[in-house]
Figure (cartoon, rainbow over the protein chains, first blue to last red):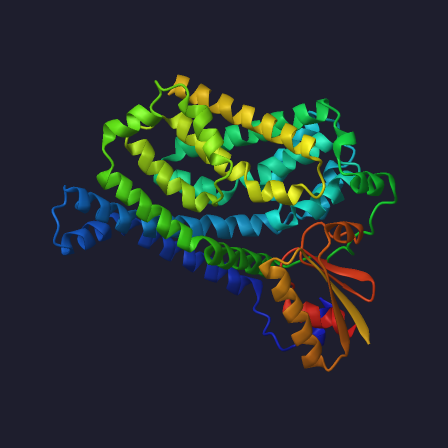
Length: 353
Length: 78
């Protein structure tokens, strides 16, 4: 790399040193992770409350779940950061442009999970995709999957609820992104984009970013570390707040109340959960600990998942951003299609589990 | 005098990128004029898929995430 020769200021650590460092970290991680349950019992025992009282339960939950989730998050976000360094929006666009619907939607939803994405660049990405010949429905599959199926949501579900629910969330999240994108594509709503977007669409394609030189493995590790730093900077408050809330619900909310409001018998609870979720805006980190506690108190899985998906996938701030490129009619269709998918998942789950 | 454009909607990372460009230019003693492009249309036309993006004298050099400080200096002094 030319840049490194020109600026020898940064000591270039060899790749093997990085591999070794990562290995040492993994071993330390595993050791600490396994020591967590006895540690949390020990801390709880130090606090003068009855272990099986409400407060005792809440305290144990807090001291076990907070460190556990933080550790899982560190590991998975790092791994995903390294994986994402192999993908870029530019490469994804090249893969998706001109793809047929159907197969394109499946590919797009999958790439939505793997490509680095921030909702703050949803608009340039949307235009960049559509103007390069990525079909509208395929673009939507990407835009639905990218925020909904993210590693923070999956880690929290895995850590707090269990791997079965996490895997189901992954499968149904991808499913909604694929089907909703496909439906939007079938409706042929290209005419409902804002006028100026169509002008770019029919005009010359934008200049491409010069291809990067090949990053080394050390660069990819650095990318992973940056991802961990960034995610933690953004979500740690939410996690502690969320888990704190969860602990409170865990210890204090009476069980039959939740069963009545959010149990499987109350059919209307799913649509209510979806509608309530739209204006609410928090990231996965804030909502999932609450989800776990609600489940523990007898709320139905489908209702809770529908609520969670709605909070994450359909957020008012994101709609306002997308308003710049989509007409209100198209946004309404988008919300309608995605919300129907979430409703279906909610009802299905309440039926199955 | 180099004209550097920073593309971004005004999110935190975009502001950090602008600060990095200014700091790097000062360190290298290069005169730059930093222009912020926040309009989504202009960002898209420039070919930026993920923000923040940077162009130097009309050539797009970076898109997505904070730039690497060493490489940023490379682009500015090129």
